Image (cartoon, rainbow, N blue to C red):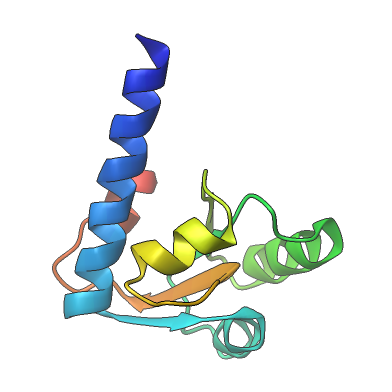
Length: 108
């Protein structure tokens, strides 16, 4: 029973990410995430499971300073890039405008 629930939650998160990419604004990558958090434009940051620990802690620290939500994505960077609809890997996704998605309120 537990693996089914995990796959459902992953599918639910993927559908929310797709909706954000379609109707809202998001930026991919480490540098863009740092810029958005320094300007306090980021609403939420998603970090893939295989992001390097030093980079992960730096992003979490900046998110804490910017009062931004952090969500640890269950999949690796390939799965996160695919969920965004891109054909490349992405270890960090920053959401600046959720659009029609309820991703920020559901993860709070």
